[in-house]
Length: 510
Image 1 (tube, rainbow, N blue to C red):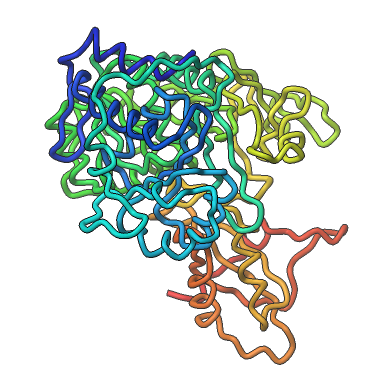
Image 2 (image 1 turned 45 degrees about the horizontal axis):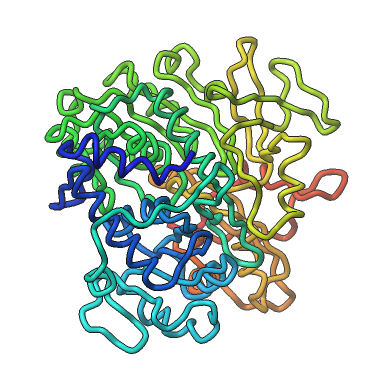
């Protein structure tokens, strides 16, 4: 199960088939294999070996896609990180992951220059920047890094099922970040199970306009490479550009978060005729509002899929043929997966009874990187405990009720309230804080902070918003409102009731 064997396979047996499109760049499998080989061989020449970790801090681009497959070929471990991380968040990720090289956009030169003195594992010659106009001390342009590297396949390295392929970090990095490990076997399961679930073929055309540093991108990225299909990567999401490319390139499969689907449907450029080639419109990241599900099923019938899942490795799929019959459901376990709903005593719930969603899967992570205690809490007797609440109906279809962990999903990105709370509580005028997710038409959810102020506090909601948003690690952690309260609602046991806060929330700011 060496996923690094896929690209050279297609490069040999499907050389002239169009493989990858990004902006004006168009690659056949033969030419894309050569492009990836240059990066793989450059990484080896820099001294990296199988098992070494290298991080990326890149927007959607050809170099980022090449990095995924260069890691696969060499047995190195890729650690993709979001370009929305700020200095402290990026430092924590690079330090925790044991990265020995970083491949970043040139806009991060100043940030990396500031933190590199505290990252001794990354040698000065291992800061590689895409778009660097002028080489400076310790920083090398991507073009110079790969210029003398061979386009031939790198030396063969033995890779087995259990070898690590990537570490995907949870979006929050304040405190102890969670690095989710995926092996070559796990990613091979993404290749095969989702290729079948989405009814993809070697003639399929996938388009992805969301950031491919997040795990949701693997839902179509891995099946694409497994099948030797065609993949179109947009550098950023623009509804009109997506519609235009669907029509031009005859796109068959697209994965989007709710905010993107909503933007697509509301675009003045939208018409069902322009999307006639599409066989799958896939929602991931958070449940799509029923209003938009109905619109989608009416305008483009027989195309809507939905996935509920965790990067840790359990998923359910609502198939396009069930999208109307089981509207509101997030589907059934994918093949080879098992689902249970357990109550607080570990007893399996009957249909209709709400409990914790637990699952088994061949895609399950072997664990959190360097955090065995967290791993033991998440995986109990082989079952992944999701921390989410739901129930199954008489047919076994899952319905998501609430997020036990109070995780916020904003624009398809997981946002953990505790990460933001740890920042807000540092303000001298704040006595206590609870961050909740509030529905938002654009992002799905946005963070809002409810606070208890210290005696004689002078801070205003506007000031606290500005103060907090300057200090959080990433843009998606920025709070959109502050509600000052006298006391938090609690149950009889004194447990804070965040759900009641959400239900009673009334916007204070425009």
